[in-house]
Length: 161
Image 1 (spheres, rainbow, N blue to C red):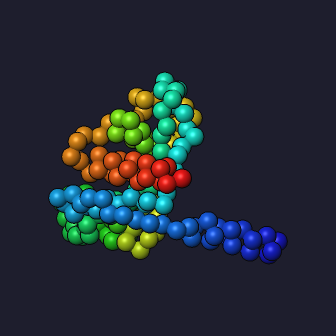
Image 2: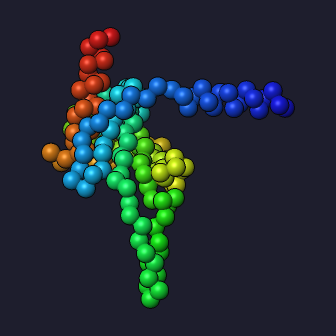
Image 3: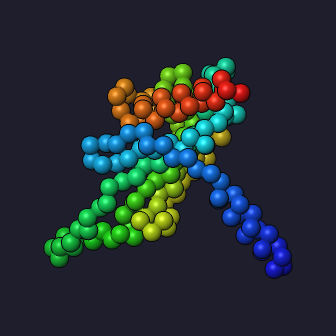
C-alpha cells in the first residue's frame, strides 16, 4: 500500500511540474495583469456541433489581480472583513478559442489566494458545445489581445512543424 501511495504522489508531482511559459499580454487600468501560457497552446479535438470544419485551440491564461486592501467590518452593517486568505491573488483559466471569430469558451478555472491556496474552482460539464456557447471578444480589450496572441503563437508553431 505504501508503494502505491509513493507512486501516486510521484506521478502527481511529475504532472504538476510541467513547464509553464507565462507571457504578459496586457494590463487593465485597475492593475489586473493578463498572461498567456505559451507552452499550453494546442489544437483541440473538441468539436462544435454547428461548425464542422473549424479548428479550435486550447490555452491557459492567468489573471493576476492587484492586492486588495482589507475592509474594516462595520458594526451596523453585514459587511465582512476581507482577509488575505479570501482575496483572489490570481486565477488560472483554461479557454477553448476560435481564432476564426476571436471568441472563447471558458472550460475551467481555479482561483488562488496570495498563499497559493485554492479558493474556488470550476469546470464545465457541458458535453456538447455550439457556437452560442462562445463569447465574442470586443476589439481593443484584454480578452481580444489574449486571443490574438494565442492564435498568432499557435500559427507560428504550426508553420514551424
